[in-house]
Amino acid sequence: MTAITTPDLLLRRKELEQHLQLLFNRSCQWGRAERVRGAATIENLTQQLVEVTEQIDTARAA
Image (cartoon, rainbow, N blue to C red; front, side, top):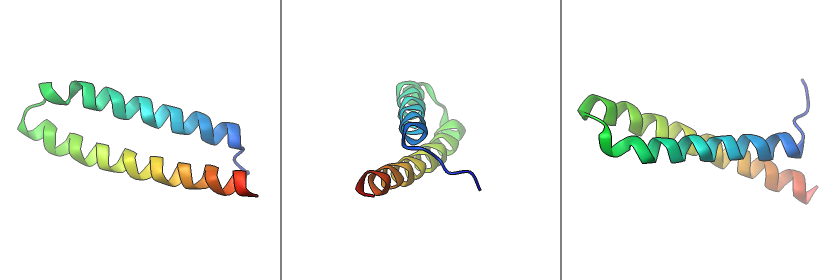
């Protein structure tokens, strides 16, 4: 398994934050079906963001 470096994790966190911002910016234009799917996507990306942030914190504490 390849080790993920802190710079890679920071880049991934930035990407996730950008994707979330795009979703939030567009969410007011969504119909009902898109809201359900969008909410699930936002929840998924938020969970990934939490996990990446925890990995960054762990790497910095090491």
